[in-house]
Each structure stands twice: as C-alpha cells, then as structure tokens.
Image (cartoon, rainbow over all chains, first blue to last red; front, side, top):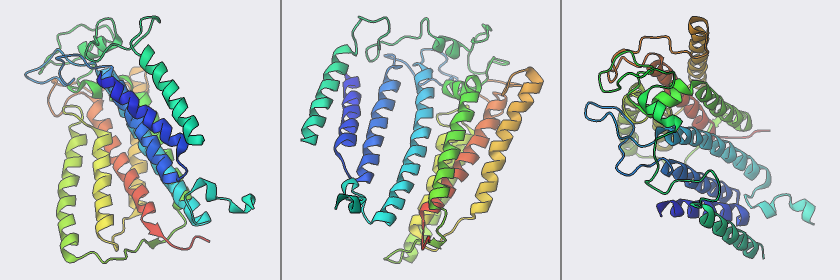
Length: 111
Length: 250
C-alpha cells in the first residue's frame, strides 16, 4: 500500500504543474513529481526481508533488487541538472520582466 | 475553472493508476510492495556477478570476479552500465554549461543586506572541513559502501554552497574548477578508450579486480567513481558560483 503514497505524490506534482502560475512553484512541483516517481521505482525492487545490496563479511545473499536503485540514481542526477537550469531561467525572467508570475509576463501583449 | 479542470484530470488519472497498478490483465505489471523477486530477471545475474557467464561463488573476500565491486548498485552504474553513466555525466555537464551561458554575464558578488558575523564565518569553516572530508570519503569508497561519485560530488558542492551563504566576500576560482572538471571528464573518456584498445570494448574493465571488499579492488570502478566525484563536485561548485553573482548585464 505504501506505493499508493508515492503515486499520490506524483499526482500532487502534476496538479501543481497544471495550476500554479509562479515559475518557482512550477519548479517545485516538478521536483515533487520527480521524487514520487523515484520512490515508486525503487519500491518496485523491494523484497520483504531483503538486505541492502552490498556484499559484506556478514551478508552475501538475500539482497533487494539493485537495478531499480541504479536507474533512480541516474534520474536524481538528471533532476538536479534540470532544476538548476530551470532556476537560472527563472532568475533571468525575473530580471527581464520584474515578475515570476506567468500571467504578468509580457504585459504589453495583454493591453 | 482551471483548477476544477485540473482536479478532474488528476482524479481521472488517479483512478486509472490505482485500478491498474496491480492488475494481472497485461503481461507486465508491478509486483506488490515487498513481493518482488530476483528470479528470472537480469538483476539475478547482477547479484551473482554472472552476466558474462561466469559462475563463481560470490562472497566477501572472493577474488577475480567478473566485477569486483562489493556495492552491487555501483557495479551496475559504473561497470555494466558505465557507458550510460558517461551519458549521465554529459547531461549534468550540459546543465552546468547552460547555467553558465544564462548567468555568465554577471561579475559582482551578490551582497547580503545583513553582514554575517564573526561566529558564522568561523563556524561555517569548521563545518565545511567536515563536509568536504565526508564527501571525499563517500566517493573514494563508492565501490564498498552506499554512495559514490554523484552523492560525494554533491556533498562537495554543498560545502562550497555553505561557504557562499555564510560570507558574501567568498569567491571561488572558476577557472580552476573548470580545469578540474575538464580533466576529470577527459580522463574518464581516455580510460574508456584504453579499454577499447585493451579488451575490445569501450570502458572495458581491464584493471585487476583484486579481493572483493578491499579498498583497492574492483579494477576500474573506484578510479572512474573518483573522477566522477571530482567532476560533479567542481561542476556544482561552478554552478553555485554563477548563482551567487549579480550586477549589470547589459
């Protein structure tokens, strides 16, 4: 049932992307969406009673699935890059238009 | 109206996902939480280190395995899927490059409205030292413990961030970090090309695997992960440096 919570996180992120007008809030919504997806993917590899997939002197079997964790590692790194680039554009937009609200940008066209 | 439409869409998506998540209608579906298994999956080969057909016993202290990393996630990321990781490093580089292009026109250090006091400046230096040491530890031991080049590099970046937010006169040598970043990335590719000539495959792991669990083991894996850690750390430091600037751009 814990996977339902992750899916709710994904839905919250999508809701934020659909309804928010502030650019910073859009970026935050995107991050919530990413976290939900990452948690869900990792949870698909969980095996009850499984151990962390690191061979030690005490443990050499009974691991959880390492592959979803490897894929999520990649996703997290890409997410950092996307967020950084998004924030730099947000800053540029603010300096150009004096606002971060999407419906206030390009006010001249609305007149 | 827009919010109502969004709520409606979310509800429809939610109903669809919740109702089909564990269904057995299709050939492929997700296992319920905790009921996953390695049987019949490629993951089983990763765990047994038998992707290339070897079937040795895998335990702490085993020698000359197919991949010698005790951390199985690291063996996937930096050995079996090393080429994909090179792509991952490239994407992060392109993001940092994009930030440099967008914010590169500023020259002045961002000034604080409240002058940070003496205690904050000195205290943050102590914390930064500890964070840096931990970051280096994490990517040097990436083949033995949780973590590796990416979280280790991120910790180095966060140490630099702490210096920036505790002292508005702090600057980094962007050129030095850029040189370190370029050198690390180039070495990564050069090591891959050496593998191409030595074993016929790009990023072929041609160094001795050693004894599983030792610091000097797993062949090329710790070398590549150290390079990734340095590259990610310097990249994030430069990125933070660009965000910490202001000034007239025209």
